[in-house]
Length: 116
Image 1 (tube, helix red, strand yellow):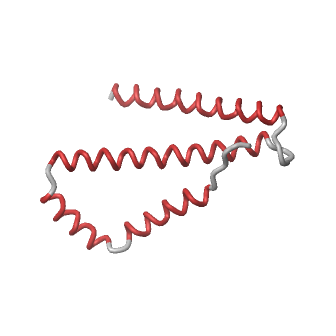
Image 2 (cartoon, rainbow, N blue to C red):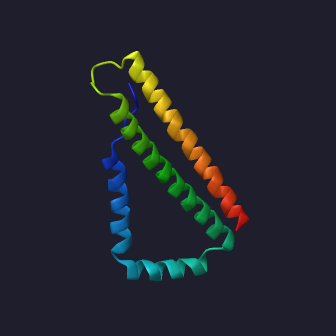
């Protein structure tokens, strides 16, 4: 059976983080400014790298969820207790197409970013 992740968990975590960041933003800004003075440039760089990694992981999770939902909708017309051979093949091909496309798009974006 295909791994299926609920989109509600991804969206709820992002809505939680956005509501947390908007509440008490004045306090957060003051704390961030105070922390910036007490954190070394190396620690700031490490923290920034960690945040970037977490953002990338969240984006990949969201992408995987969307791909899974689209491929499931396309390939599984009659859900049952088992996947037929044609459903398995359709899912595999659908997922491969999406991942190949995303690879081309991301490589193109990297190249364009390097040219600027």
